[in-house]
Length: 110
Length: 120
Image (cartoon, rainbow over all chains, first blue to last red; front, side):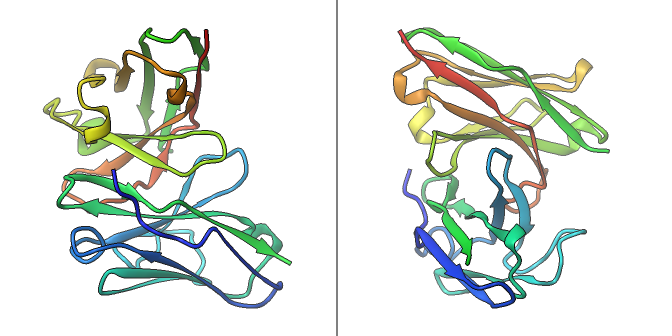
C-alpha cells in the first residue's frame, strides 16, 4: 500500500510556528479529504484536523490544516512543549480503494 | 462518553491466528464503521480495513486480503479483527478506530491499542 510522504522531523522554539507537509498524488490527496493526527508517546493517535481544515471540538485554533492539489499542510502556532509528538496525515486512496497514512513527522519543541 | 476498549496483549507463534476485540460504548454502534490500524514499533500507522457494524460489510487493504477477517457482535457492540498465518512482521500495536458511516476518511475516537507479539 503506497503511503503519503512527510518529513521525518521538524523542530522549532516555544512560541514559534511550524508547518508539516504531506505529499500524495492525484488518487489520494488530489481527490479526497485529508485528516491529521497527533500521537503522544505511548498513546493512541488523536484527531486534530479532518476534511482538510476542520477542527474537532476541543482542538485549539493553534492547529490548522490546508490542502492544495496533491499536498496538504498542518500548521501549529504558539508552540508548547506539550506539542512534542508524532504527527500523521491520512486520506483515502481511490485507486487502491483503501486508506493511506504518511510515515509520520516527529515534532521537537526546542 | 464514547469509548472503544480493546482486548489485552497477546503472544502468538508464527503461523497461528489472533483475534482482537474492540468494545464500543457511549454511542450508537451501527452509526460508525470500525476501522483497524496497526503500528509496528517505531513505525508509522498502517490502515488495515473497515467493517460496517450494521451490515457486516467489510473492506480490506490489499496487503491483508486473505489473512484478515473483520466481524462484529451487535448484541454486545463489539467488533473483532482476526489475523491469520501470523509472521514476525505482524508484531505491532493494533488499534480500532471509528468513522461515521458516510463520512470522509477520519477517525474521531480510537481504542487504547492491543499489542500482539509474534514469536517462536
